[in-house]
Image (cartoon, rainbow, N blue to C red; front, side):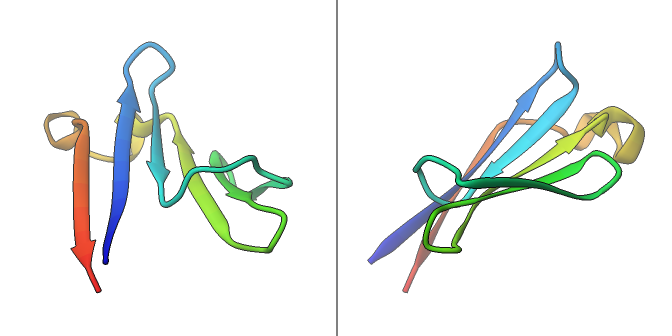
Length: 71
């Protein structure tokens, strides 16, 4: 089985979204300043959004990446 995690960066919003699985979120919870976790109805984490990314990490390391994990 292959599980894909997708990391997207929106330069206009200066936000990074780490997507673990697709689905509609039931709860969107800010766990720290500018760090938001979207949780589905069954309690599974769907994605993590990081705001003001360019202030939190080096800009040259910010890019769109897709990671595939085999389990």
